[in-house]
Image (cartoon, rainbow over all chains, first blue to last red; front, side, top):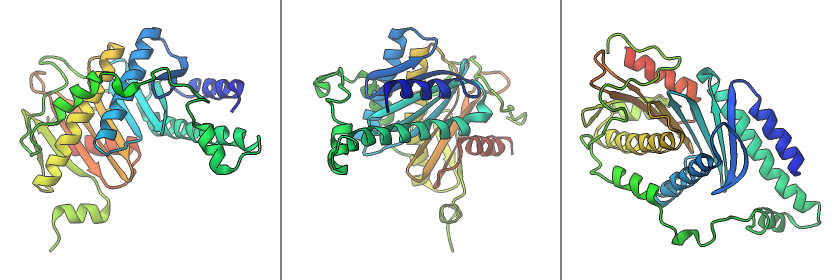
Length: 190
Length: 110
């Protein structure tokens, strides 16, 4: 996918529905960012996402889609191998449409990388290898394995308690805080 | 005779759980409840970590899809706001997030 097409497609996704922010990354490298956070915050978010994926990988797990609700909006994270698409949106009812669009985009993007190589006359196997090679999209974090993973360690520390039904589960919310309920009513019986 | 867990898995229907005050409770057995508890702890930690980066500290829900499984939680507080607890679910299919969250809310409200 040519950079102009990539940008156009991401801009199109960025402007769909209630989407108000979008970041695309390859591992820890920010490829596209259009969100009202500082560059430092975007870097921190992308690094945190990479750490989360790393944590799950260490556990031999591979979740590919996450969504979280916050007081300031909703965050969708879609991953496909090295690539991550992070989408912020306000209308929680549109969560599945945003998810489908994000996943379709990533799928098309990966296919386009391979197509670009096929057009150069490479075999499919070779095209796939070159398309996703580090040389095509360099990762700024060389020697990543040597880097500390504080976030991963924090998740591990939290999650490695005894696995039984009475293992401690600390609330996310501090006492007295009230979560945003978005479009979901609070059951009066609770 | 099939267990509640076996029935839920066969029907690909959500298994619901509740967690508060350091305990997770469910109706599909200790192993399944422990599995939910582990997922809940990791997922809420992921939510908090990302929230810290965005300076958004109040988390209302988290959901994930992995292979042919969907899971998630919602957070609620009681009227006094002093006793936050989580309702959650696991289901052995890729359930749309909206449906998953709504089913958890329905269960919490029921």
